[in-house]
Length: 263
View 1 (tube, rainbow, N blue to C red):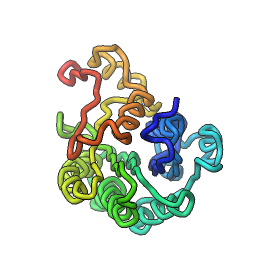
View 2: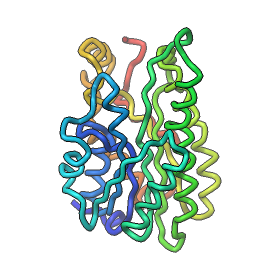
View 3: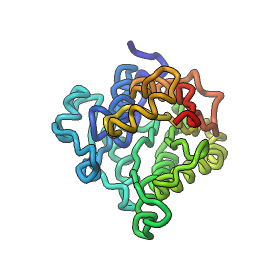
View 4: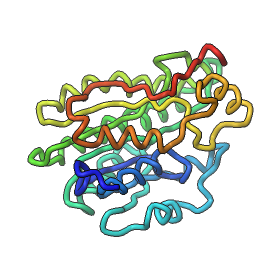
């Protein structure tokens, strides 16, 4: 069903590499709501992780969203490249003439403890998770048409502010930076009517966790299951629409009552 507040809006959604992922669900939800969407992917990262790249490849992921056409475009971009964020936003403007909504969902996962952590991985996690989020927001700010109401930036953090994540320090530290930048970015843009909020989606079943972790975390969730990507997508769709216009500078924890102390 189309949402009147999103019909005709243009959104950029990053991190759309796998059909099981949050980015895919967000892009699908915004398309259903009537928006035009440019999706960014970087499957080379997924290919090197235990969960692997989507077997259908980027082309298959885009086809599953309906295929490139008047309301959907795709760009592959590596956010470790400092020029990539601007290229992604500019691709949306080239395709659709403007951009109204930025959803920075991408992430670099890093499993390194204090004994294992390296400077190179710290730099990469910072570049992809934090630096790219700032540069995406900067380019969005530069090209946004303030005559079009409803400018929205939606970032993603994790639960590092609610419990330690000592086995994945580069990820936790860089996501902590996203958390902390939210209020300052929101202040920089609110006079132009652009809101900035960040979502912590909690444990979401995107196919990355092994059976043991899935079971342990599941016991700590009152529903007895992990979150679903479409549940995150519905929250993002609301934040992207007119109904959320009075909300900015917030970290929204959407965790289904996650009881970390039970694990």
